[in-house]
Amino acid sequence: MPLEQRSLLSAASRYHSGLRKTAHFAIGSKEYMQTAFLCHSHNDESLVKGLLVLFKEYGVELYIDWLDSEMPASPNQETASRLQAKIKSAHYFFFLATANSKASRWCPWEIGYADGIGKKVCIIPTSDGQNTYGNEYLQLYSSFDLRYFTNSPFSRFMILEPNKIYV
Image 1 (cartoon, rainbow, N blue to C red):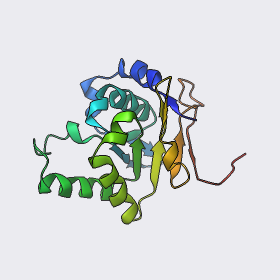
Image 2: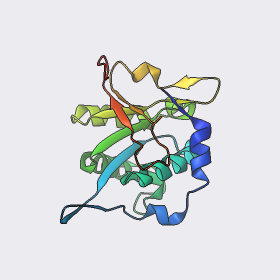
Image 3: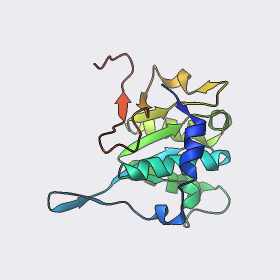
Image 4: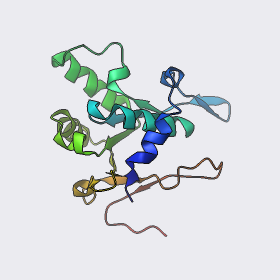
């Protein structure tokens, strides 16, 4: 089920610069950090901020390239190398599907690179109220079901595999 973009815009109201710090959580006596690379369009900054808030609430640190102070100001070979390194090191690879990301020149490159190195690509389909984005990928890649993102301590999210039914 696609995530309503208005839900992300609502979550973005809880965004603050402190969210950029790394999220750690304890399991037993060790600290762990779950990291995810977010493939997205820079034109979706407000939606990305909302997603950043939701993921942070679940202990997942999203890598957002435009928040990376070491990223070159203008895209070049160093940009591509840094993105490749971030994709390799992340636990997850998510693609925020929107009209803007569908038109992006970088998003298909990032998805292709992640898929090519064996990363599990996970689509976050969205809806703007009139159109749904990401459906073209759902038979190829996993999808992220965010219906379970609520303020309840028992809420969950699911990653759905293509052509598999979970009960």
